Amino acid sequence: MPTYRISEAAVLLGVSDDTVRRWADAGRLPTIKEPGSRLAIDGADLASFASEIAAGDLPAGLGAPIVAESARNRFTGIVTRVLRDGVMAQVEIQAGPHRVVSLMSRESADELGLEPGVLAVAAVKSTNVVVEVPRHPE
Image (cartoon, rainbow, N blue to C red; front, side, top):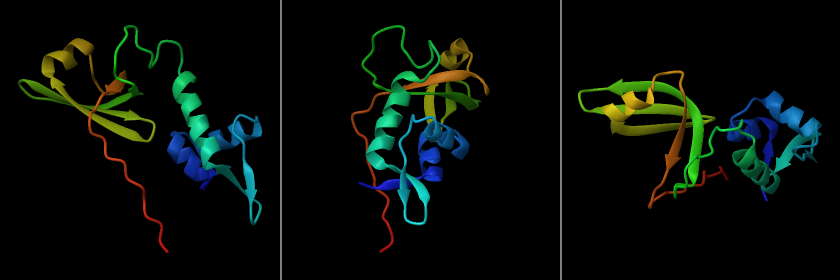
């Protein structure tokens, strides 16, 4: 199983290095010592922790739908940009390290009050998702 440095875990979780260290110091995120006394996090532990955060660390009402729906991939974030034309709007949301871009009707964007700085949840449903793994230099 791969291991991740504190800084790598922070990027993957969308938080600061200090936040990851605090979670580790508090016992919420297990760490291991690598050669040279460097702290690391086991990949399986990091995946489990990321799932726990996604399932329950949002404040009440954020990220949880008030109606039943089939979209399972939900990204809570802040609207960073809204481009409107006569009929359509392009909305960009920064959700942790992820940038989510949605095209919708201008009317929908207006009704939702989407402007930079607004908290929003992107519910994503797709029948085709490509998963890539970065190559490591030999």
